[in-house]
Image: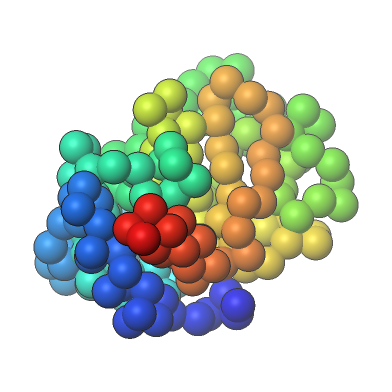
Length: 179
């Protein structure tokens, strides 16, 4: 699937059938504008389109991605992004910001960063690990690929080539659970 591909309506229909998905109503455009202002860059259109369908999941929703990650609302994602940004602003963290050898290989799909301001927190696990939309991939990566980021583990890895692929996997898992 292309990184610019929107999530098909059939996937949305499957996700909405999930009895415990806890999908929220669509996001208000003013919330998206606030996020863009805080970030200083625009989020990718497929992600905006996803939020226009549902502004993530409620905290009580069954994890949508990989059986452990709950989809964050725009407000929650912006809060997580700010926490990571604030952490990186602390003394002693500047050396870990970019090309830190503990965070991967130089020719990998994901940048060797502990945190990158172009990573948008999409989903969170019960342990606080994140799935992020990657706005600045590594040399062999794909723009807007989905990556896993953890404060407890140094490595960063790609879990899906695109947002559409991630949602497709979630819908396929749910469809299997519904049958």
